[in-house]
Image 1 (cartoon, rainbow, N blue to C red):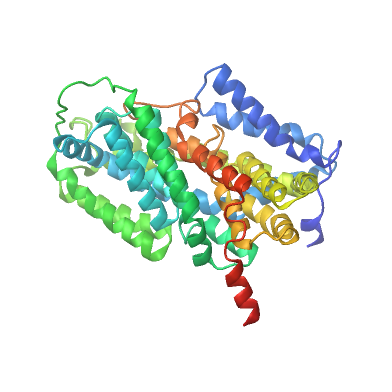
Image 2 (cartoon, helix red, strand yellow):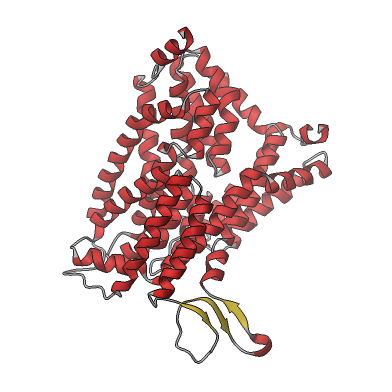
Amino acid sequence: MEKEDKKLEFYGGEWVSFLPFVIFIALIILTTFVWGSISDGALWVPAFSGLIIAFFLAKDKKLYANTIIKGMASEEAIIPVVCWIFAGVFATVLRASGLANGIAGLAASMGIKGTFFIVITFLACCIFATATGTGFGTIAMGMGVLYPAGIALGCHPALLAGTIISGGAFGDNLAPVSDTTIASATSQGVDIPGVVKSRLKYALTAGVLVIIGILIIGSAYDGSMTGEISIDYNPRTLFMLIPVAITIWVAVKTGDIIIATTIGTVIASATALLAGLIDFVQIDPLEPARQALVRVSGSGLDRTVDGILYSGISGMLQVILLALLLFASIEIMRAGHGDKRLLEVLGKVAKSARAAEFVISIMIIVLSGLMGLNAPAILTVGASFAKPLGEKYGISPYRVANLLDAQSNTFVYSMPWTPSIIYTIGFARDTAAPLTAADVPPYVLYAYAMLAVMFVSIILGIGRHDGMDKLKGTVKN
């Protein structure tokens, strides 16, 4: 036990524990924006290089190695990895069935296209994410189904992808079952329904700003399509909306994306097979190329096995490996007390209630942006630093919880090195409009709208005393 709690010391002090992140971000900027690379290596190599270089500055090399393992093996690292695998397979089954083309064809027949379709996509993703509490599950659904359909309808590709992420961030911020909602509320000792009710004004305001932004940006994009849009599609693909609806219902009822996508994958596969949209197994190399759950190609020793299930899993490898490497970096930062040093420095800046709110916001924005994950950042900042600051300056714990949650759903969804962006461009890779890590960030409008809303609320003092009467009543009772 003592070994687990032992501090990881570096030559150069506690700030060196941030080195894996610094190297990672610097190399990401170099490879993505300077060299224009979007290969897997452009993500994995920077993350791995940061871990390697920091190793030589650690005083206890054995502890450093164990810290890497601890970070990668932690529950908070494994849970999203498992969710991504199951969600990836489910989305791939839907994509292979042709559902996206069916939705596009139906929308086109109703006159829905371009920017209007993006607005509908945002609203659909907001509803799904708020019901399920999963930003990544929403991205999987949106990029697997709505993105290719929107491209066929002449939508702005990067704006459409950014809108899907925005919908996921909206729900992650607002959903009662979201891990960020639970983490922010429990860290401040307040009830989840009260927190959700008090943050509605922020989320809805940011949502309206996103729709306005979509209309403005989308109006300047012609979609390279003119006249009436006619899309040929198999009407039977619309049967796939049944497993989608069932999956959403299960996700809402259980609050568990693994349970929902497991049931969804089975029902979606069965529906697609019964509707004749995909094959179960394809072995004969002379058969016409068709989507199959399992496909065997080649002959003899050259025979390989792939198919929909394989593609669904392999398509998630990039974000999974990146996340594991990032979780190792997060654990190194924690073990080296770099996060504590940062929070202590920022904490000294707070001299008033308004300054305290700014400091809490900067704390959570920086840590979540660096980590690429928001719940761990909330847990790091919440109870140890944000709560004492809030109590010192008379800020409502509901307000502190809202600051933690809202601000943690900004840069974490919009920086090019974060898992959400990498996850998104992974889904777009095999579509008619592939994207790079540099394409999407400017269009994650919810991130910037929420930043603006929260900083304006800090300046004006809006919500600073939310729920105080309720808390006083609780104390009297």
